[in-house]
Length: 338
Image (cartoon, rainbow, N blue to C red; front, side, top):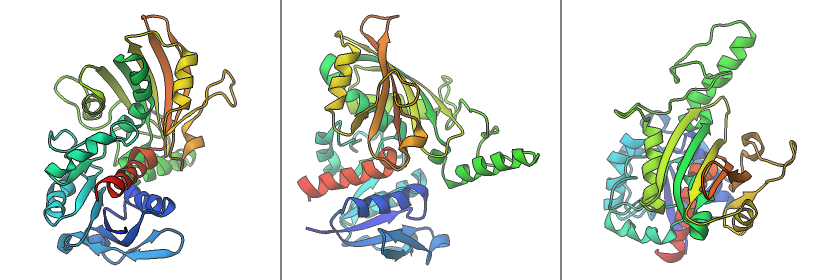
């Protein structure tokens, strides 16, 4: 059976990637509709190698007859249009943070908690987790099932594409300008991002965490269980695409690095590249841009605690961290629920 699919935010980084992934994975579509704000109405976006779609105005689009909506235009847009689409009979897969902590909206990573998907019937909405949360839980769920994770300490190194096209342009323009002795201009980031790192993503909360750090902590618990203690430090780095994470876990049971590698090699969506070799022994973000798997490297013991492990986790934040995960959810819907 084929399905009518609408993409909200089709002209953005994630929206364009969703169109690519739908085509690459041969999702069964009868029709694909590209939606964006009135400013983008009439623009063209690609769907696969041969098809070009004219962008329609989201404000006056009638969702009746649409089966699945993939939304990636930000929280305010999702707040306004996701319930409207669901009321018209569509199932909404939302990439924003707006619905993630709603008790009636499942937060789904298909490799981790596919059974949670059934909860979409309450509101007709499914939430896609934060990009950094997705790649971390894909890597950690197999280890949790094997030896039970008690505590997670994660530091992220997040690319500028997570902040949108304007952020990518700012990194490019600042880098080029510095070589031409121009003073770097700042519009997206509070501090210079070129040749720098910024230990703040999203707004600060009262306890000193940023909202991005809060998202990782609370989303991980919703997906994997409230018994896991999580703390995060999220940093923006001058990389265009691909998030990296230094992850430390404390387990209830012993788990050797050798056993952890074996478990992860058998896990869906995970690729292990882990040798003590400076050229081929680990993965960096520039090497995996455009890929869907979560890559795990540098698995080693944390000898400061009992049953501790360290690892390095890398994924394309526009693919598995957003578009691919959303399309995988749609595939599960089509296979088991529609």
